[in-house]
Length: 408
Image (cartoon, rainbow, N blue to C red; front, top):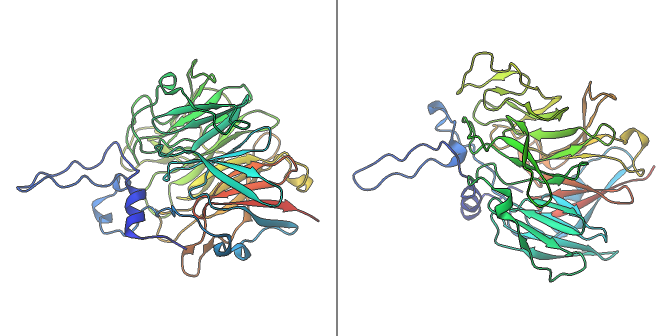
């Protein structure tokens, strides 16, 4: 079900800010409002387009209203509604004792989820932050990263009253909001990896944007590890090679079919992934043309479809799923808005050969999108693998978490 009420749309769209909005035109009465951030890069002949970002549902959805029966999985796999009542649920991080922490974007909350066996209960850890999508857990501490704040909750898994340590100053966060909601994770090197998206749909970003950084856990030792990254909302490290793989959203307003979202592989520090001049598999930008735009650019391992909003990435390492899924990558595609006919709204797998080549994308969890009337029910976003090998999938739209299991 698509929520398009005026109030919700206004609440969601007001979260976006761009670096190149159309300047307000002076009038005799008062200056006109600047164009919304999401319209930046739209051509005059697209001015009549009805396409606009899909408003998020910021209220709880009862389990009885979640169409679990519509979801399709490969034979032997089963989806269950594992937890509900967490509007905007995105990235998940798990503590040693099984507590799960969940970031959000538009609703400004971080949840703590407790598994009581037959049931799960949740509480709000912190509220009224500016898009606190980024959560990570390491060494007994929860890290929360909003656009303008970094908080660390020491010992929170055993002490619900733990107060946050404000680490904002150490991380030197850029101020622009657009594309700067975060996905964060600790890498195999013990560093905290943090993306800083382009502050626009399409522009030449400032020096501190369109990049992935890594920090020591205390915010020191900042290093830029990748540039030319427009808007990554998910990354993971290959279990064997330890190489970083990440999704990246293609720009809007260049047509229904492109540029496609990307799945990238970082084989070494310092690579350039093309933004703003080179997109997808070597497509030059329309608004920022440049000679030899793709020269020196690391092109994606695979494209993930036009305007798919590819989000979380997870390499499966458990033993519950069949052996063929070992080290297989799962990618959640939240779904398009800048496309006449919706695309994505699913979970796919990506399998490659041993050296990361020959990628093959296959559908895994579908049924969120109804192509017969171009409507959707939910929007899958992130993953968390449990110790028993089952896989959790968060649904931002319905505020739910599904548990995927396998039994032959």
